[in-house]
Image (tube, rainbow, N blue to C red; front, side):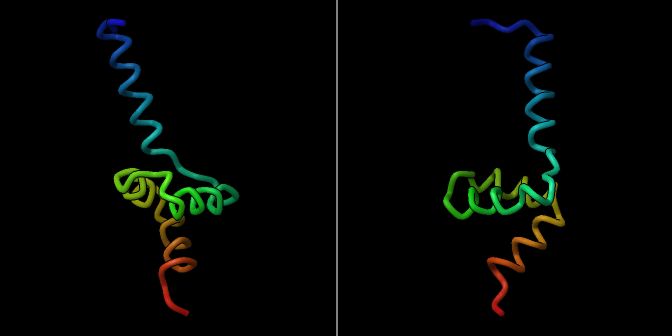
Length: 67
């Protein structure tokens, strides 16, 4: 299947929106479970943490910081 320029551009924009997705607080635990079970690549984890700093802080406190 060959894409024309407009379709290709739409796909790139959709991918960028997906990368920049902000997660709702009620989805954080499910997202953390996906990260901890290696369902996301390292790049996806990095992007998720970068675009969701509040989630990153919560995740680090819950799973990384010693209590």
